[in-house]
Length: 375
Image 1: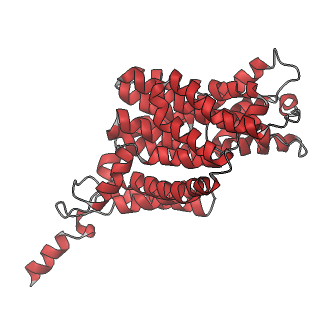
Image 2 (image 1 turned 135 degrees about the vertical axis):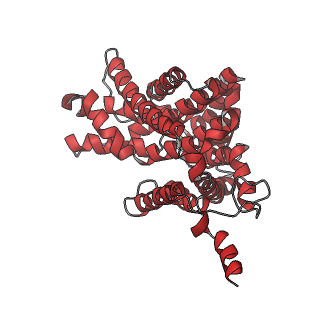
Image 3 (image 1 turned 180 degrees about the vertical axis):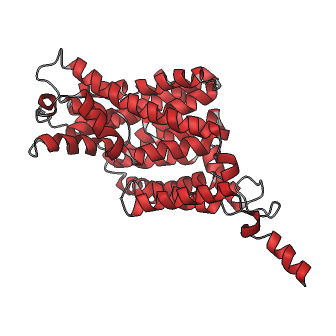
């Protein structure tokens, strides 16, 4: 009887537990707390945090329970990550929710979305200098775009063994946009610059908004064909929204499809962070480089906005440059928040959405360029 009880105990999580599992469970609990109590990207942090709890319950090998076991349910769900299925579905929903009016009203702001992508390529070079392979450096660099689905998609294509740490780093920094960006924004701008008011944008016609996703898709994907899965779905989703006659499909894309993809993406990415796989020195380097990439991307956007003001009349508020990172719509909200700290009557949100949505396009193009260079 004692032997039977001991054999049973040997198969429990209490016996199989490793200190690394405990660490990751605590991190998962922190993610859930930040999502629920602090409202830091709850739609992302809560699924990822609970996924961490699922992935760090020690299981007896061979039962088909672990995410890395070929015959497990979690492994089949994780296939949507490793095969790059979930990120394009998320982009479809984002496209169906996005209004490109502010971008079309003042196309010059699109440049800020491109400028912020400089952080991706600078971090790519930094990762190479630290000894990462080119495919791994490409995946680490894309964290600077602050676009979780793009980071996961590129990593799945180039360095699937790094999906866990890169995805967690990307979504962590996305969630911490209100914490990370304001100090950088204040460092690189003066109070006088933060007080600049933007002109009211012109009214954009419905025809322009319907034509834009088609033209944008063709131009961007001819430039970077490897961005096709992401930008194709983004522009298709936007066309469904703007065409009006497909509102039923747009409604499904921006609700049922993106919600389902986000749940499965977040939960399985969290479950992939098993302590023995995740807690390595390589993961620490990825988190440090990710913070560097995100900070540099924000700074590049701000600096380029100041550079543009040397030639523009009227001037643009350089805070808009920080919205070039594609954490939609959080970085645009932070621009509004920092601007209103100086002048509560200065409304920058709708203007910040222009570089914000162009940053989404820019990060997808950057991912396509890096992918094509690694092939």
